[in-house]
Length: 215
Ligand SMILES: N[C@@H](CCC(=O)N[C@@H](CS)C(=O)NCC(=O)O)C(=O)O
Image (cartoon, rainbow, N blue to C red; front, side, top):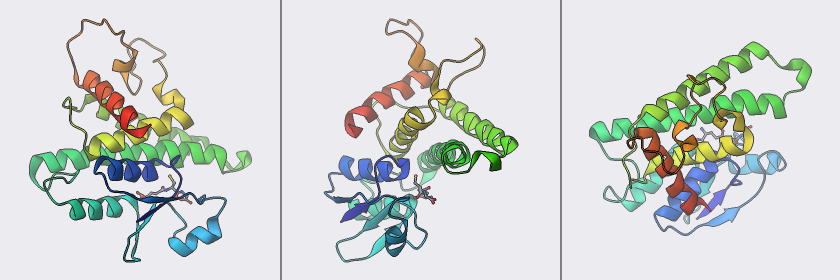
């Protein structure tokens, strides 16, 4: 199979990491979604990444649809999203929050800065997107992140955090006031912190696992 799209896209990244975690080999097509736009539209009429071209020639588009098919291929015992019940709902909620952050911080804020000419920018809209991204980050921080688990919610949250670190680091910067929180308060705690392991700490642990697999 061929994964289309560069790894600086968090959506491509979450697919790539999922394939690696599951031990599924793939080739990488590194055409650029902006630089090779016309060519890219031959693979995906939307001109977006990722796409996954299967060995039988079928092309899947959209990371959620791609990951759904990958889970189907490996079967329920290895699938990265639990098949049913509360665990599935919790996983889908975390994925929705993490992809929502990508869309709001990425499309809403980063694309506004990189793609739209400055005279056409709409500050109120950018501020709204920032508020939405920050709200979702805070919600993710409150989630429970069981130690040692590395499935789709963790992979997607990791891809989102990596994207923020590179493109919108202010979301992860130390908080300006004592009371306000950054996206990952636990990451600011020293290694000898005596505070009890919290969901935030587990989130940090998860980020460590993620870095190992993603590098
Ligand atoms: N819902 C899509 C979102 C994909 C997406 O936003 N891809 C970005 C790169 S990170 C893209 O192709 N942007 C170019 C564009 O939308 O014109 C997915 O999950 O695959």
